[in-house]
Image 1 (tube, rainbow, N blue to C red):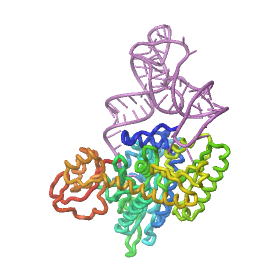
Image 2: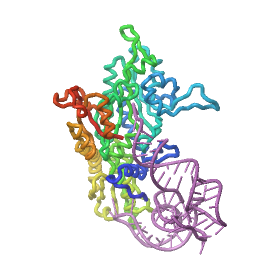
Image 3: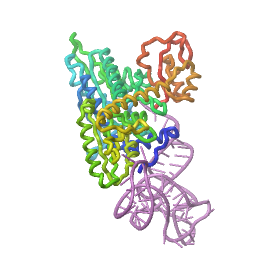
Image 4: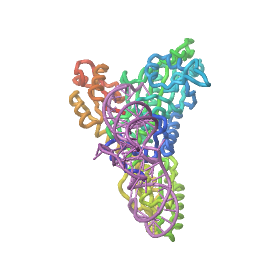
Length: 490
RNA sequence: CGGGGUGUAGCGCAGCCUGGUUAGCGCGCAUCGUUCGGGACGAUGAAGUCGGCAGUUCGAAUCUGCUCACCCCGACCA
């Protein structure tokens, strides 16, 4: 039996850890900073992979695989890149019984090793665009780690593309950001802000970094995915060049983009409650659990038979088959556990729909249905069960998104002065939309004084002039200001 | 690296201040019986290098020194 989960309000960090550990999504490993992803958690990752991979492929990208180890010299080629990543890298210096002549870095990201190959693969403008994606693990030696959100080793997807023009690269960068946004909102039911990162927050080696930012239940922001326009920064140091139509050799323009197992952390922090994890139907491993009430010995076989029959009917129904994903039903006939125990257990694990089937239901040709995100039970006649379940799965997916979106919107504020901003961040938390003059001095002041950072320049308003009278909330000078989203973050 | 804290059964902890039989409790685990529509109950049982090393003492989980590990807060975080 699991310990009771810490209520969210008391200690969000402890609550989050309880949900992760008790729902058996992940565990601490013997290697500090690395986590073990348990089958429950890995099933989520497999569904993320499946759904996202499909979407990535429709953009024309193809999957490939590059080595785990990167020659140290590769990393050093791009000045900003090495400066940003060197302090976080694990390095292999000894192998085969001797010190290595050239050290190898365990990849923190693969721009360099992939460019070393792109340089060979790209010859002509006819080879472009080159669109490659890789599902793999990476390692970044962070000082402080947290299950799923920041671990030393994590699983991710990284896309790398080459284009003939900066404009085309910019379009690809934005296209992939859209792919991530739609994926996060449709599959994870996690509303996000899209936007541009400030200069100080951008990827080491990029021209521009875009990200999607979502709000957790403690009102802190989580960067859930990034998309970078690399311009020719890596192409120049790896000589990734093509012969253009005009007969001239030119450097390619590149992008890279990624999301990681951090999404699972975001998912947990967005939807879970004090009963445990809540799996959005699109991502759930098991969608329906049937708990048969087997107390009466003479009824046992009949109930189990009926449970199997119901399960089959549901799976074969047109209503269920017409859903855009496959449904899995689990009949828990374990007689060593009591029904009440099972109810709690499946709530902890986040299974979207639970059906109870007992002697009374058999008599009335019905089942008891409980939806994970609602606090009630209904009696459903068996003949309308498939339709009811299909409806619930669809509306639960929608409701989870709406609930998260309402929460986010209710905790997003417009602030016009620095005093107002500080007060809002301190007392309410959440996101603040405000004006900034683009001066790093003002950006730094916000960070140092409030621990909040400029998350993004929201995409919708990114190129919009903001009213003449509204000045940078920090310096209040006449410098032209832009709209920014500011929040404390993970 | 700085500040604080914790190491006792698989998990959570008490005992330590004030040294003294065979180191306890709850959960979990095993067996049997009664239970089973919201985390059942009874009986029996298995399970411990008290983080490690050294010291003080007739005697150390308990006192002293050193050391190791982990957790929290800060520094880092494309």
